[in-house]
Amino acid sequence: MPSIMQTIEANSTLKTLATALKTAGMTDWLNKPGSFTFFAPNDDAFKRLNIEVIMEDKDKLATILQYHLVAEKHAAAALDAQNIFTLATEMGKSLSVYLDENEIMIDNAHIIEPDIECANGVIHIIDNVFLPQHSGWYETTA
Image 1 (cartoon, one colour):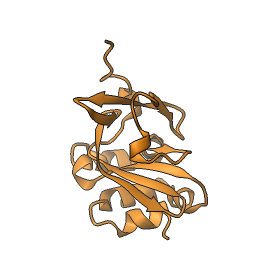
Image 2 (cartoon, rainbow, N blue to C red):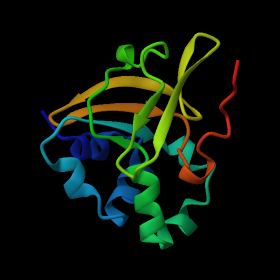
Image 3 (cartoon, one colour):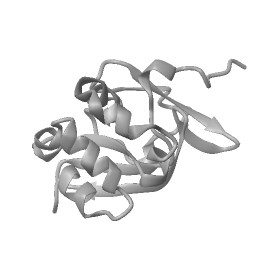
Image 4 (tube, rainbow, N blue to C red):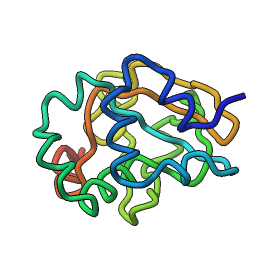
């Protein structure tokens, strides 16, 4: 079974992500043994950003990409907003998990392709890029 990085490289909808991970120097991290969850923005998600400018700053790029990586494996069905409210990421901030019209949201993204099994964890393809500086802007209180 391929690693998270190998799976991303083989997926035709994740070409921008694969390039960003290589630029940020994260390929070894996503090839190493472990039990990770990676929220993978698809190419359409990256089109909403000025990714060329972000890729010029490798530290900022690495921080953004580490915000998509959780050091525990979480299947989509386990991301029930009644049980998990936040997920600690490798960059130190947490992603929010909540329900939006009975659909699970992770920060500002929908999971559009869940549970892609890998040798070192699971990938959930998402429709938005998580930006640490905007963390929490979408949260509401009931």
